[in-house]
Length: 67
Image (cartoon, rainbow, N blue to C red; front, top):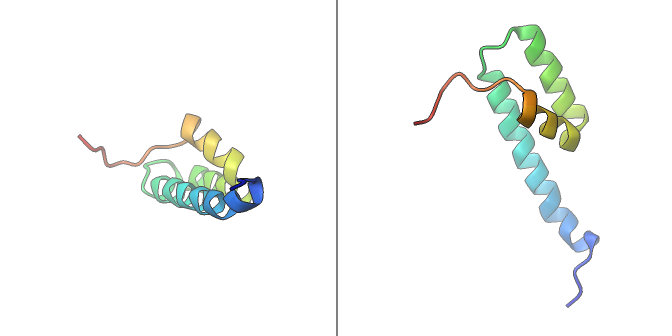
């Protein structure tokens, strides 16, 4: 059985969508000013992979902390 990018694109797309939704929920739940939230949302929305990685490294965090 040969695995190529075409067969993985469905799962990869769903994974990227799930990660971006997680990032957007975290952005909306953060205590960052509204202007910054809008910029982060636009970055994640228009550049799903790159925007998510940048958000993961430098983005605002959710105001709720899990212990």
